[in-house]
Image (cartoon, rainbow, N blue to C red; front, side, top):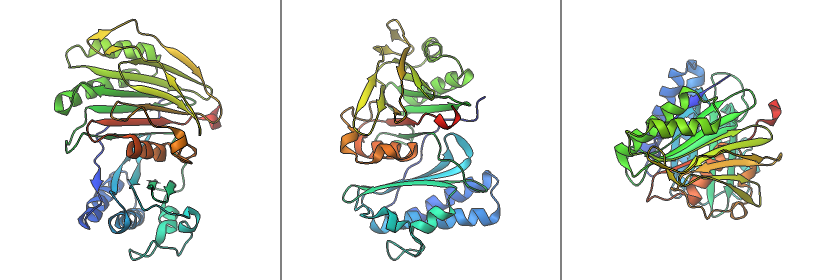
Length: 336
């Protein structure tokens, strides 16, 4: 049973001027109202988002914020922030009520997370802070088991990269697509790929990849990878230079894609099967992220939630000279 499917161009806002606070807050309030949140809950979302983005503006280096419907739960409002410093030496202290990074609303990170339905934070002194906060209309929720982020090249407003997620009872199926080139034509190919994926996301990854290849001949095409993640296994089919990885805290294993351009050139398509142990995390990304990243240079990151891992990889391995997309999946072993 499919719970949710999601694809979008993520609207990142630079948190460099005070005007960014109002811009992110307005987006969050609009999303909360659209999702049916009550007035009190909308107000809590507004306060939490204001505090989080105010801290970026006042204290962060190269801080950016994103507010959107959660990729695997569209009725949940999600805030993601990331920056390149100064970081927090003691995250546990920052999460205590009454502690503030100074001079904003004074409510502190602890109160922000108390208003959240779920949250995760990762921070390293000198490296920066990653924050992912989810707001549901009522109550607490489990951290989402999958997340993806997209960022367009330079100052472009649309990205040629895209992702989609389909969640089932025990499996999560994801698509990452990188349209050839940049701009509207690449974005068109990516959106067509997502539509084809969502027609029948329960198909085997190889069948989905074949459907994409046959259906994208009228577009400029691109690179594609489809992964189905179950509690103990990942089934993977890729065409072109999408990178797929099975990662742990101190190592990673690459998954195999065949050379070609989806919609135009291909060798024999194949589906590969990989076993997953209880500590594995699955990563897919376009070539807008370098392949040279390593879990060992990102202490503690791969113990965090998929949203925070995605933010960390985008920050540390992403290029501003290309569209970028990264998707993270944590196997749903609690439902095994």
